[in-house]
Length: 348
Image 1 (cartoon, rainbow, N blue to C red):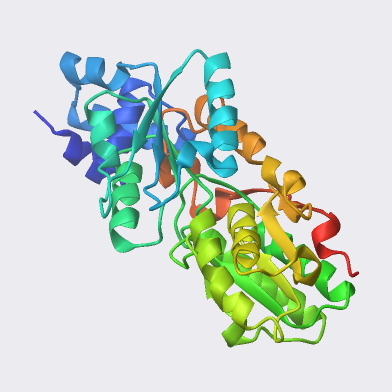
Image 2: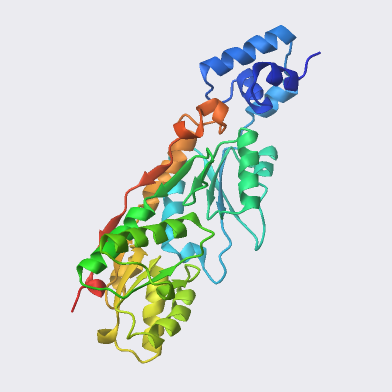
């Protein structure tokens, strides 16, 4: 009796695609379906009843994987709470439950095992890092045909479903605003460059400065970890160099507010602060002293969109390029950002 591998070889597709075609799971290109059916008939291959049953089993769970971020309380972070609210709202409307999972420090999560053990029907991955282990784990998901979405992280050259915001444009808008106000000595407090959105924010800063005929001073490029505490720590450097810095752009509001607190702790009065721009436009931005100019990111809408694409879109039951085209045919969804101007960045 022929094997599924033999059918896959004859049809020129993966074994996962053969399984999806023969079990009627997920959308498949008509040409791919025809090749698999013709190869199966020619070889006389019939999948077992057990295999069919397993392929069609459903848990009713949508998995959400959260990152490990040291010294950060994830559920109190606007970034995560808003995205989870959007994800949860759309999942509830679709009749699914959320299964929330946390990474452990240094762990590369075995995403595929979540599907093999029938814990989840689809998975949304938040806070992924651009490293070999993470990439390999997602490539395995794709090879096995599991539906998943990566949020707020980009893997260049891959065909993963990704939902994100336009961080390049958001950061460009922030820097353009500062330079229009006449600020020239701009410090940038970014997150770790292992996150693609940190890299994109940096690119936006560079573009914004170039448009103003300026370049980023490497000595004014600082790094935190997106926590308020890392902003407080960065305040030591900024306080010591206030004569060299007239504006601070932080890659999220928590770090921006942390810098403000750190400056106050060092006896620096608000009227002597540099200009500040944050990122996310969290609830805390409007309540900070002074009220914080910030880049608004549609986190809630991003969460809803990710679930909608997984559950109602063409990707249900399939995450392979064979089922849904090449990487160039699989768009990365970028939602627009908006600069909300408040007192912290207005030239006195």
